[in-house]
Length: 193
Image (cartoon, rainbow, N blue to C red; front, top):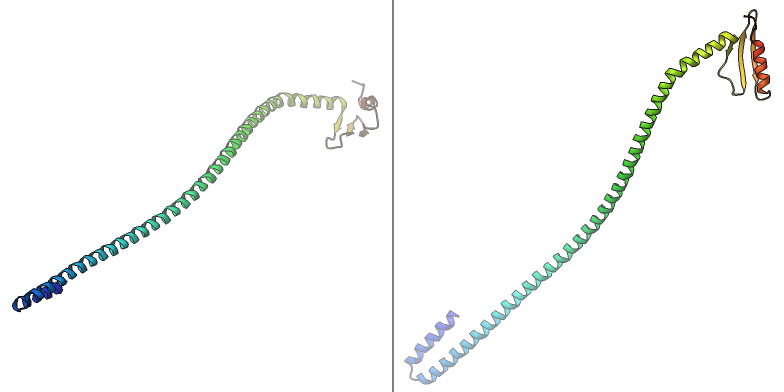
């Protein structure tokens, strides 16, 4: 571009030195006009190229941003689904926790009832068993019968220790009446006091 200006200036100097100044001056003006028009065309082309390049870059940035937006929307959808799943699991765990808390409370109540019953049994045992033992010992002293306790429920088995002789007892209560069993047992008891 600078070279063109220098060439044009040299051409003007040559024209002024020559006799054909008008013709040369007109030619120089035409060249200068042509140079100016070419300069404007080049400027327009460069501006157009730069505008197209800027538009391409802007379009590419817009496409990149659109892709990032789509990716972000996918990640957001994925996170929303994960949140829903976690919420559902949390609700299930809350339900299970409430159920287990009710079960624990029920077990505590049952344990308290068992402790109360155990205390009642302990109280009864300390009062009843000694008197039951006393009664059993009294019956043994009076009847002189020693019972076996590990028999079938309908079998009465034991030994009567009489004055001279020990007599085994084996009675099946399922085939005899209660009255008959009672009479047989009273027959072992001595009436001599």
